[in-house]
Length: 517
Image: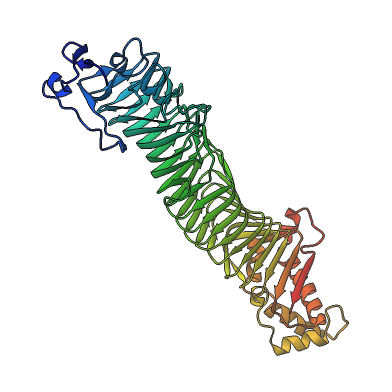
């Protein structure tokens, strides 16, 4: 600066004093030396700083006729900002030599400033940089912290950085943003944590990166920007308000424009972009509220639902899903595991491989194909189509169906027919007039062969109010199939007449019982 004197802060006097420009800050601050801002700050420029020991109101570090700090500062203590307007770095026609300044607070910073700006470019400089570093917590109680204001025209670039070792606390009446109508702002954010109940919006930043340890949104509006690559090293918790993410979320590593390493918790707030959720690891917890995703691509990790979750397309190639709430899945290709203890509803085309277990209520309204043998536990309510490709058996569960149940394991419905049985069926029809000994032989056949391993327990575990039961893999003639169908229906009438009274005396137990080769 082309001056004979400069002003520095005198801690003992509590005011600025004029000193020779040749005299260093170290001479005037009892052995305190000028420092280079490092550690949390990663800046291309090196700043000469004035050191202030003790707690300070930042408004005292600016001249009354100016709205900006008169120098770059290191505060060895806590700081407050309660003035109407405060700029760390600013350039305009009237304010020169203040376009590359920094403020480092080695304690906590509490702000109630209506306007607190890290870097603002009015005009006259091609580049401008400003930096705010807080070793402790940055508490925005009210007002506005503006990270950067660029230029309304095409000239100039503003570089701004905010580095907080502790937590950025944004109260419900506070805002952290950049000026949306000014352009060419490049922003770098590093923070141990962000805990926001107010407004966070840096969506107008031209480019930048944000690295945060923990992100908690309790209220207000937190807007993630596509122009700023945001990475949360530990966890994101949405507890209230709105997490207005312009990009889809990635869980389990650093990937894309918005990602979290370990945990995503959805617990009552509104998630803006729900087109895609990608999980490559870590944990996704839905613990409160209601959420829906068009697509969830899950290659690993754990998904826990204890509330209400709906997924149109669920692609799980590995990992585990645990449902203790209300989970609705449209289309799914399931590897890994899916365990339901409350209510799981399938509405589209779902393929599982023995990895879907149920001890609660499983409602199938779509087309569910199970490639492994299934033990029915809990309640299976079917109004769609279920294809048990390797058969099924009953555990501690109940099957209620008005749709289609298909099995390719004939032993589920009746035991091995045997050659004699097929001969009897071929020559004697149930509605034929035959000698008594023939009828007795046929009755013995059905008593011996008809109730298979599953059919024996159907009376206690199944209710059919319509629909179809299809058995594949059975080699029968048309006459044999017709005879077995009639006998099977008569067997059901004999097994559980109570079931018919309970379902309003349905005229038929099953619309069709088909045997397909």
